[in-house]
Length: 468
Image (cartoon, rainbow, N blue to C red):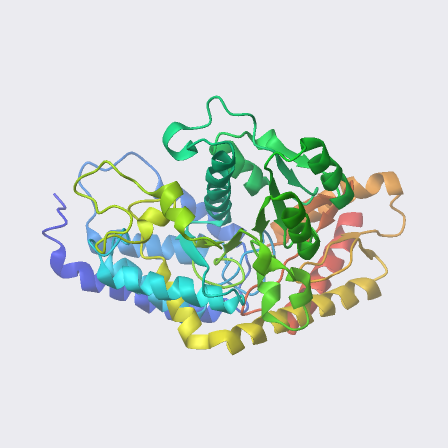
């Protein structure tokens, strides 16, 4: 029988196994394929019936290391351009290992004064990083979807107040449907958040700014929620946040901004105009595991009136848990999760290690790489760029000679499949303005111009082989 108590002396050895594998794996990221299809057969070694008698610590860890380092997707490397996935900075990686080692429950000071203080500092540093005033607060959550949920949950509580209702205590029953207005850039994660909050994913009415104003006029003074989008996922384009803030001020609306990756435009003087007005929002959602380059799962919500977090997400009724405002309490009362991993450690470590200047340099390097990719696409006769490049995403498709217009979507679907099958890079397909396209996103701290050069060379090679 393999009992963890009997293996307790092997815990350090198991960690050393992972540490010994880490160096070669990290060193390989610069040149390894994103997907090693030959290694995927190893995944069969994970299955089978649940063992009656386990293999023990050393053998199990060795098995997982061998399979994972060979068959895992190299999404933390410099050649993964799908889904807007960042890498993990060295400081963030080490801090994440420490978070697992210490295994803190970041519920509050009653469970971990250390994790609570790290999170308090990290939230404050995020606020400073994006130029928000000292009155802002926030919550660290698992993803941008949960960040949208957190911000829109506060908006729901605000909206209920406008109707003389306490939605936190009594729910939405008996109230009209909450009006939610956005542009067509609204992301599925915001819809999912509204779905989970009980408003329904179809609650969002989409229109341009003129259409939103007409809709607000028709509401005749009813409270409404506006969702602005900082960084559309196909092109990196932005809603005019300042103009939406004007609408929110004119009509007394709550303004929520989904800035999953686009919020980081605030870090560079070259792009800060794209998020002008962000400080006038009521809530902001973003991902840390995108452009901040910390491990999954890490998102954050920033709230102009942080007292609303405790109102919307406090958890009364458990006498053994400290309530909102109790010195023994903490950040679990400010978001949807109660027992929580100490996800603040990688955020604190990466900001402490590289600071505002380091992140500005990284963002501007990625801006340069996106423009470099744009030029390479424009210079390739068989490639066609489909949108401007305001930030870090380049949306383009193949348009080889001899393929008719009506066949281009199917050709690009085959090209996308060929890129996945090739495995050297990963850049997923999308549909932009009715056309199937690639939309590589550059947010990984490791990516260099040589990676971009090889990516375009690879795509052009695959265009030829797909045509043939």
